[in-house]
Length: 325
Image (tube, rainbow, N blue to C red):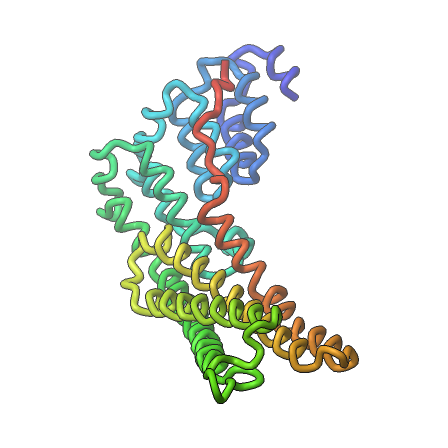
């Protein structure tokens, strides 16, 4: 198709058809079509309005790979700050409209959906001039007002999701803290009546028990305090960008450590008390691994996704070369 277009002159190319095809390709994320057809059409047909329409479609459909192409254009600032003549929307206004459900449903967790929407808004905002950010559209709304209005329900749902998750994890963390705090003062084997020291003080397994008891105690305390911090957050739009996800990563990580350390301490005590009875020790250790495996299966994928979304490589690439040359 590109070869055919190159053989035609400007008068033989139907500009609306080419424009509509490029906009549709951008909405589907077909980056090869967008770049190849754009290179093939005459330079006189490549206008700021056409470019704006392409990136408008990419933003509405949250196609980051297509949107990244704007960084490879010499006139990217002009395109980013261009005002649509029909509805007076800028690209920042367009970013304020919520993504379609098809795109949102690809992201696990409502809070992560809100985070991704904020990442899109901040990325486009970084390209626009301060004056553009204050422009009104035909509904007499600034870009941030459009974003707030369209994401109101998503933000409420994200807040509810965060609070429910934090409440559940707080209960688990508090139970672990109570158990491990009690275990620290109810030592296996008891104390020597003459010296007051633990009976198994010189046993390696006893030291393993005390070390992992302390790890579980401290990590569960950290987890509970972190989740309490999430519960008492203000839940502003910017909080979903980094603050709340970082707290959730810390809370889930320390909760996982506390569970693993608690079960390790339990296994150490069983091995200490029944050293010569492997038929008791081995099954007990295998059963003790079930809660850890269960937590990993249920919560670890969420932890990884939050971590990657917050600390991982961004979907946006500002180092795109000049692909139109």
